[in-house]
Image 1 (tube, rainbow, N blue to C red):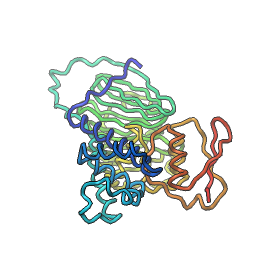
Image 2: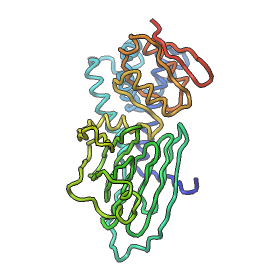
Image 3: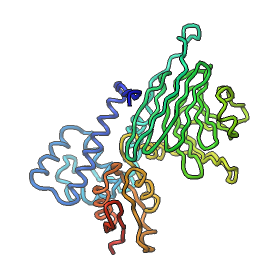
Length: 359
């Protein structure tokens, strides 16, 4: 789409990209270690570890995440620091979580500084309306007229309306992450499933599900209010600031919004690692931290046309998934399920897979 603008990487984001590449390489090495290295691969891994101390640290993080520390212990000769007392499983996991938070947050939370503008020097704003959408498995980044950054997740559709007095994004389907350019004179409102989510300069994620809206704020504060259809369709009313009595959600908080009013809307604090995992889709990954197999498969299904079914086996209900997956990589997913979770599969057709406990 012609309105899509690439994000120009600055030094922090460049480092985040390098960290992401290192993470991918570490995941690849863990997979190879799990099925035993060839002599050539052993030499290549030794060279990779020797090239950077961070490579060693990241490999340990991934091993802890996948519960593969026993694999590394069997190959301890690959590591030059064997004289040090090895960390316990839980110590390694704590290290992995803390360091993973640093580079994941660098990837997901980096946002350029927005300079305050003098209203007298602000150029005339031309009214505009554009629509953007992504296919299943696709994500895309859009730079909006005010320099806000809008990222669309898989199978999403938005209508963006800009004028001299209003910034309005109608999320009709899917999920978005938006980094809002600061402008106190012109609040930005996201309209989703009967809710108005408004900010003047912050960052937040909005995910429209079948009967509710999941909202998570990663920077600043947003206000939320339920609105009737006639209000949502009135641009002048949307341009007005929401009252101070509106629900407020701040950085590090989330809430499930219910336009029907049938469920209580409670604001919850979110751990930084959980936030980073929830936003891992922005780099083409899905990170799970103990979700049930059913929930993990439901999330994975959003990124592929393949339909997954779970066999009628109570043992599958006891499986919890932890790890990182590439969105859309169905073959890789099935291999990981087989190797790490003892889950076999049967292809019922070109677009349907049955998952079974291998016993």
